[in-house]
Amino acid sequence: MKIDLVPNEDEPPSGGSRPSPSALRPPASIEAFQHKNLDDDEFWRRIPQYRDVDRDTFLDWRWQGKNCVTNVKDLRATLQDLVPEAFYRDVELGLARAPMTVRLTPYVVSRVDWQNRDRDPVRRQFLTIASQLRPEHPMTHFDSLHEQEHSPVPGLVHRYADKALFLTLDTCPVYCRFCTRSYSVGLDTQKVEKLSMGLNRLRWERAFEYIRSRPEIEDVVISGGDTFQLKPDQIKLIGDTLLDIPHVRRMRFATKGLAVLPMKILTHHEWVDALAAVHRRARKAHKEVCIHTHFAHPNEITGVTRDAMNRLFEEGITVRNQAVIMRGVNDDADTLKLLVKRLSYVNIHPYYLYQHDFVPGVEDLRTSLSTTLDLERRVRGATAGFNTPTFVVDVPGGGGKRDAHSFEHYDRTTGVSVFRSPNVDADALYLYFDPLHLLPAEGRARWSDPAEHGAIVEEAIAVVSPPKKQLTSYETAAMTPTVFDRVVGHA
Ligand code: SF4
View (tube, rainbow, N blue to C red):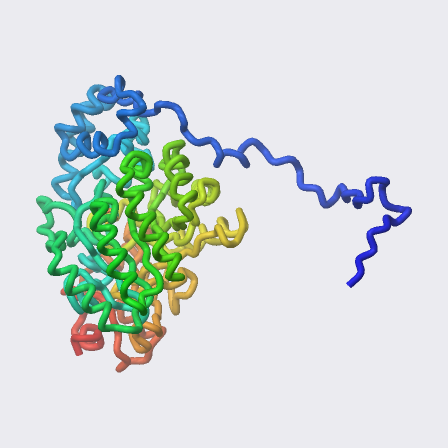
């Protein structure tokens, strides 16, 4: 096709078309560039214990590991008089009730504004304080995603036909309050005796054997715990073993490490070299190896993160982010928009935003589904579509990730939402429950009566499914026999 490049006499002499004033956007405000403002100073020196720590020391991944805060005594030695004595007592009481132990890298400690400790979005994710805890929802239980029920061998979850989740170990560089696997990850707490999923080569062999035996598995998520904890030769062993399996086409190393220990990418050269070697070998075999990580708040992204990401980007390694929506952390549209833009700026793809999993000990962090639906409306359109996360609910009962909008029924008074997941189980229904303290008074009143619990659940599922269909729901003493009889596995 011939394109006529001769300018029209009516057009400006430059040959370009004169912009229509009505089509011009007003100049961007200073806030529009906020995502580029990454903390590049020596921010850790604000913490009494790190006042004299130089940059090289702070960026040393081994120093970070050796100086983690793992109890109140460490916290006191680190923060000293930055917080009042009453705060240490609040932490002590909080940890006595928490399902996760505490482990904070100096990097995480330094990202908290301790003057604003009650509301700080980083503190809220990692350090439990008793004064903010709320009673459990009566339907809560451990392993809400029913991972163990979908594990043909210990530590290998096979829920979707073409995908497997390989839980390699049960430790992490930090322990998050909101952990889905609080039933297994980290040390025992006063409240929870953990199911051991420690690093065990025999267990790994059984997992590899299972993957080899199932040609439909193309996608393997290597998780834990956290794969930052794997040694370089273990990264190589897992990567090479899976690459040797012809039907495995994609693997993702899951780690929160980039958000809590980004300097490992800059100073643990053997680890990055091992990952890069697996990645290069995969590309030659036309397979994909990438990282899935978890930043929940823009304050977690600093100049150190940018430098770490530049290193991975130069290696060609794709990094995607999967964040959880948490109350008081990121449950407002401005924070999420800034997070999405800052992630994109450092070349991390904002992939998923999750409804908080329905696990114990975090009722102060969970939000209602209606909050997620509202946030989705307000975040979409803030940046390019490919950098806009999908808002999902990993539905309790093992139905997998469902688009937050795809519920079959949502009762905003009782807070019960009902989902289907046809590719997991065409007949089953999966229920999510909003936190009680966020319900209207009528809903709270109904849940305050244990005799009502079964009826609330039954009402929600009756809207979607006529009686006699199989249902997946929660095992609870509060359920009436009528509902209980209709639950998968209990009929
Ligand atoms: S890093 Fe992941 S596995 Fe480890 S405690 Fe946090 S959420 Fe759980």
